[in-house]
Length: 302
Image: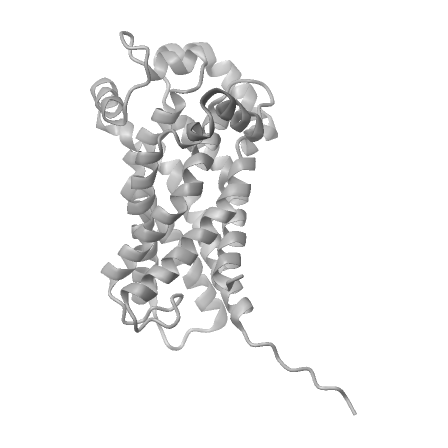
């Protein structure tokens, strides 16, 4: 299998393990809480967060799925970049390639990864917001398939694909742009490693800043399928008991909570994005070098 597949897979899995605790907080902030819901659920929320298990809630699906997602993302990005610019030999070092082509290749990678990201995100979102004791990602996935069929796993898929295409376009664009700004011929090994960490962190923050409103809408759209009284009170209008569309949900959220609702949780998300993507890019770069380095011949001693 191609080295970029395994480098992407392993770096993606590591990123989820590191970032899931803060992702739980982000999703709950995005889903929002009305004053009535806060009054009735504050105690139960604190009790859940006091348990260590709550910080890994919903991690099983992303750990198993995000590794594959990240593998597809990097493979699709690398191949797309080589198609867009025939001069590219090493996609991990696209010197001289225009940043617009890098953005387009990243967007293509995001669309390719959607087949995995959409069900993974849906399962993760529902698991993190589910108030039942000890609920697992696998239980949530089986519940979705049982009630809605396999197509049900792709609920909210359209807005997820838009988020992924735009976000991953800026992901690779901002990483490469940062690397070019910090490029130096006299860097030592530790300086190069620190720059990779910094550029990866910047790329993560830039990505989420570019698509955070879409992610808020996606989270609220998918949370509507949770059959708890709190979710129904929060995410369904009083007069309409059918799930709202993305457009109507966004309009209602803006009317009720203002523009700031679309950036609720961005601070927590930015901290998580910086840490996760710094480690993820460093892991990916190191694995690519290790997997692509020629094996040294072993000579028998005489």
